Amino acid sequence: MSIYDYSPRTIAARVGTEVDTAYHSLGVPIYMTNNYLFDEVAQGAELCHSTDAGDCYTRMSNPTNNELGRALAALEGAEAGLPFASGAAAFSALMLTLLKSGDHVLSDNATYSATNYLLTELLPKFGVETTLIDFTDVAAVRAALRPNTKIVFFETPCNPTMKVIDIARIAQVAREAGALSVIDNTFSTPFITRPLELGIDLVMHSTTKFLGGHGDAIGGVLVGPKTLIDQIWNVGLKNLGGCASPFNSFLVLRGIKTLEVRMEYCCKMAAAVAEYLQGHPKVAQVHYPGLPSHPGHEIARGQMQRFGALLSFELKGGMEAGITLMDNVKLCALAVSLGEANTLVQHPASMTHWYVPQEIRLQNGITDGLIRFSAGLESIDEIIEDLERALSLV
Image (cartoon, rainbow, N blue to C red; front, side):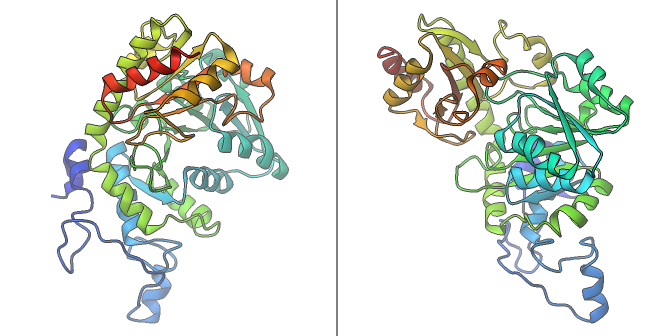
């Protein structure tokens, strides 16, 4: 019986313990090698065409990377997983493998900036068209599908507005149209949401975030059916070259061991901060799926085991208030990423989305006073005190 036949909690705690058959290391080794020795030419030829029997070259496969793919596939309930150098590399490999000129992508209008850039700026150069709409309107999603729609893509909760999309309904609509449904599950992680069980075809993660959890390793992964993962390996990884660093994969595997306990605490902090901010006189609105006031609260209850470690809130003072708060927090760290041991805050209008015209930002719910909050592992009371001090100056 393999460790991957146990529960997700046990899998996460024991990842990497079956890799080292030579020295019986309890921890997963870091295989820092480019090449692998072959016993004969026929073996080398076989390994260069498929990774099922072993490794040929680390751009294509590596034991440490393979273990990360295997672990995340098990946690998501998938057949196979494929690590990449970053979440953006994973998404690029996916799209460039499966799409061709004349194809159409239907995407939610709230996506990560690198994702949006690929969809709206790069793919059109190769004859692939993308339509961006609000996926909370399922009827609009159905109406926007075309005969040439190949991929339906979204993330939920969405960045940075925490919009919640009904995963099962979107998966069903895509399936009925013969399109592949793909979701970015970075914000939720497999311990909060398991999209494949809701009908999604393929799941991606930025392992840089909660999966790694310590802000020291960039990576990405795709998980799904083995036939599809093998196709992306053969084209998108092997030929485009966005391979994961074995050292980074080791760090992410280490982070996965504490994923559930970290997520439980971070979700607890996010809920407490959301409750605190909801009653603050200088806060206009709090966006957190765990609040009954959130428009996607009931959907979130049905598809999330917890309500997540991220929230955003809008200050009444707009741009000036957002910058003032950011300049005066002491314990919360100013940084554009998320999912780390440190609590991180960022001001989208002046930091990550400054280049987006204000009209477009506002259409997508990114107001001038919006702050995104990523819960960490500090004392909840001390984080709230830090926010209280900064809010008193707004």
